Amino acid sequence: ISVAMIAIVQDRNLRSIRDLDHRHTAMLTRVLSQCHQAIESRYGVPRDTIRAFFHYLPTFYHLHMHLVSIQRADMTSIPIAKAVLVDDVLDNIALKHDYYQTQALSFVLGEQQELWARFQQHHRDTPANE
Image (cartoon, rainbow, N blue to C red; front, side, top):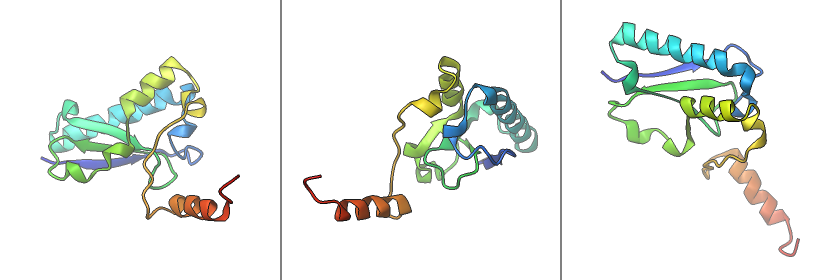
């Protein structure tokens, strides 16, 4: 069976992984565990076949976790370059409590995104010798 879910956190102050630090590890662990339990009990999909991740940059700025079964036929349509595994987020915060506030993070920027248009406009407006 193919499963795709999104878990949206209640705290609207959490907009992306950039807002996460050591104070959020218990909440993230709890949400991940509850989602795994719900998927397994409702759909019979074992937790070891579910990938949980965040997108960076996110599609919308209210922290949400994607949970997708690895058997999903359309897995190729998921923007993997944007995916940051929840386990990696937890590990990074365990290594450095403010990891996501202090580290440079790479991200994919598509030509259809507003940030791309702003970037292009800035370079059109900036003289080459600046």
